[in-house]
Amino acid sequence: MLSIIKSMSLKGLEGYIIDVQVDVSSGLPEWEIVGLPDASIKESKERVRTAIKNSGYELFSRRVLINLAPADIRKEGSYLDLPIAIGVLFSSKLIKNINKTLENTAFVGELSLNGKINKVNGILPLCIEAKRLGIKNIIIPKGNLKETTILKGIKVLGADNLNEVIEYLYGKVKLKEKRCTWEEISKKQNKYAIDFMDVKGQENVKRALEICAAGGHNILLIGSPGSGKTMLAQRLITIIPDLNLEESLETTKIHSIAGTLKNDENLIITRPFRSPHHTITISSLVGGGKVPKPGEISLAHNGVLFLDEIAEFDKNTLEVLREPLEDKKITISRLNQTLTYPCNFMLVASMNPCPCGYYGCSYKKCTCNQNDIKKYMNKLSGPFLDRIDIQIEVQRVSYDKLDANEGESSSKIKERVSKARKIQELRYKKENIFTNAELNPNQIEKYCKINEESNQLLKIAYQKLSLSTRAHNKILKIARTIADLEGVKNIEKRHIAEAIQYRSLDKKYSE
Ligand SMILES: Nc1ncnc2c1ncn2[C@@H]1O[C@H](COP(=O)(O)OP(=O)(O)OP(=O)(O)O)[C@@H](O)[C@H]1O
Ligand SMILES: [Mg+2]
Ligand SMILES: [Zn+2]
Image (cartoon, helix red, strand yellow):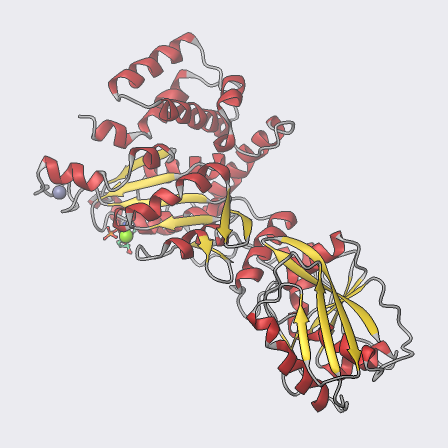
């Protein structure tokens, strides 16, 4: 007898309904699974067979054929165990006359040999996509239930073991549900252990980071060892406005697939801060692998990617970042499929100015020769540097600032940032972008108009610093953000003047 049980699969972040078709007939006792299953699914027959037996059902010797449709989508992972087991039980008439219709019900879960349903990765995106595709009920591992509390419009039920699912189908037990609102969850948002208050002095760097947060710009901090680069960079995340529900779901989707949700975390409610080490491989950074997983740049989606000591990263690794920095998404090609993951992150990078670390330092002499310095800077290619909006030098904090009072708190700065973001949101309502950093050249012309006086100033900088056109555009975007922080409509000369200051590399290395 043939039975069809619904399940779900993901390709990147996009979901598909999988029909698990099971036919059990008399014949030689063998199991066959067709429809592009990978090795982990092929192994499921042993798990399913044993789990069924250990749940108290006798499968006698039968021929079992399982087809996973549509056949052209590659299926990976062990989460099809549960629907396969249910299908086998139906087809062998070990369960029948249930009092539930399964038309709009999907099953997802890995089975243990004893019939227990194990947690799987990627449940939130599966459930979001299931809802989008019209599934009304989805039965998932109980251990994953807290990841889906925020979802509306789909009934998500958690089951502990195969027998519990069978009893549910007969209407003998109710499966567990869990619900929570965004208001309840987001109350705990953005409690960071660090704060800008801890940083003495450094007003100009703090200002640059505030501009970054306000306009969504990337930043590179250059300074000698111990000047506070890492300390400052780590605090950028504390002044970016809170995640909204949509962003939270997007980010959680990615972490759910990557399996990077922490134990008690059901939804990511604080912006991610990722700081991969400079020895990271390309595939860990941008995503990939045999079973393709999102990389650090996608794990940083809607948050901050911090590349500390960026000059130590492999040049090829950095080059791969160029495209995602521009497109805010990454496409990973594999043998028989391509996947796309979003990666809209803010990049913060830090580096020393030269091999010895003291080029341009106010209190210690640099011992490098010009060639060494050039070579060191060349570790970052021109096109890569061009993609960084703000470059700023970090000098050691002066002695008299060391015992100064506490600086401004992150929450105070965040208030100003939020105001500036609101202005941008309103201005770009029709453009499908949110921040100044996202402006394309046409939009720059439209929204970053400057007067003749400002134009003259920009022209001088353009020639003197031999700026690229991309750098020129970046100055306009940053000036736009500075004006937004001030709450003024037109970009003024002072905004342009300040924005030019943030191209310190162009200046420093053009001398
Ligand atoms: N402005 C400051 N206010 C308070 N503490 C500071 C400040 N600057 C530096 N420090 C202290 O100095 C330590 C070193 O700073 P940090 O690690 O951020 O420097 P760095 O520029 O990243 O150095 P390196 O190039 O060696 O990585 C910090 O942990 C902090 O304790
Ligand atoms: Mg450091
Ligand atoms: Zn040096």
